[in-house]
Image (cartoon, rainbow, N blue to C red):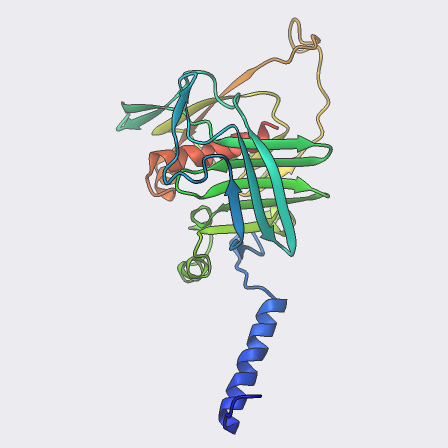
Length: 277
């Protein structure tokens, strides 16, 4: 039996029902100066054998921090699709005993060991790279079926949209994560060869092997590379060579991530993790 409502109440009820239906068909989305559509990520879960712990069980491995187990399962829903992957820890993203160095006024203020918290899956055209933060958030890049999806904490979009839109995104994203497709990125607003990271005050050093992509701002371009075999002596050998890469961030990048040391390092790890596959 329908509830007893007057005519005005029925009109309001029907309008609200229509609004809910419109939102269901056209989910709420936002845009930045370079991404046409960004959606709040509200459904996700990270599973591992230590998920029941209230705080990460940080252990030291070869002089590096490891807050989570070697294997995790990442699940989220976006764009009407379900993403569910078992990932393994990238033990080789950083060289053993490598550290991040933090400078104040050009003087070394602190050194911290790097953290092993980036995971990957690479199989027959499928690429997944995810970096877990110890506050429960994460960065992730998923490339499948010719499309690339990217998940980041909403702070990564701060400064690239109006304050009003960013506040609205924050309200719409109680779990502080947002997702977008790289096909929604306006690449005409980025100059080829102009990287987002510039040198000075803080720095972090890491190691990667044979990167297959470059990362400029929010844009990731997968490339098919032809291996050269005559660059230097022994280049034609089957054994891969290790390339060590250092990264430096400036004060603005540091402030962008709330001036938190580990959050800054996690953002760098997510970039290296996605290009290192």
